[in-house]
Picture (cartoon, rainbow, N blue to C red):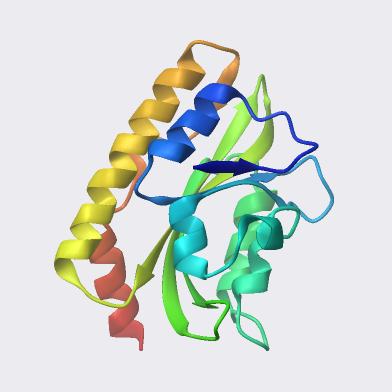
Length: 180
């Protein structure tokens, strides 16, 4: 199921992709103050432990532990401010509604209408186990992005980033664990 903020005009094809996806997906509006979530799906709600009405209209920082997420927040701010950057991956310390801590491998891609980035698509993966789940996430994410790219190609909207630019999740996790 795709859950849309009541006063947001979420296109039906986008709602359909969010409803079918097995990957946790979010859509945040850069046109609103503090870039709040305007569309989430059931896998995101399952991952976070929150109901749609508890997350829609909020910036996703609410998932960060007390004290924030550390230096990654600055990298995310830089990504959002840099018009030339189309997509990025970030490993973010998060916690569920019940307080369970997890590392969130978050892929973000800007969605442009004509030339302006109006939305940021987010895909989240909770790192609690290794290998196979990371590969399954990578496969599901690629499938969802291909579907979204096809939908946007029929309009004047563009999903920024390319399949080649999507870093391998397993490699990202390995690099992150080497830093710890």
